[in-house]
Length: 92
Image: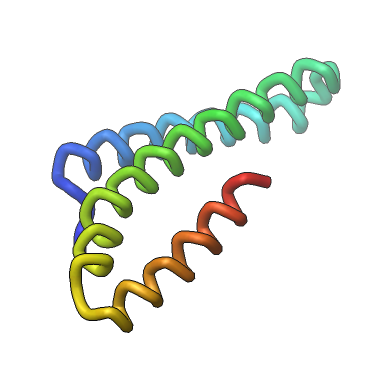
């Protein structure tokens, strides 16, 4: 199942902004900026990516997971396993 159109547009906008932040990080390293300043910007990019992941996770739960869980028992079991792995991966 695809991502809702409005979520897709917001996600692409956020990812483009993050791409700009990463290019800024590259410039900061190239210009040998103060390490602490670079680390603060890395933290900002990390948090921005986490926000994108949360939005996509919500979409996945609302659409893909809900449909699979309401579907056949084997689809539901596979989705439960997938969700456990996703939560494990994203809780680190």
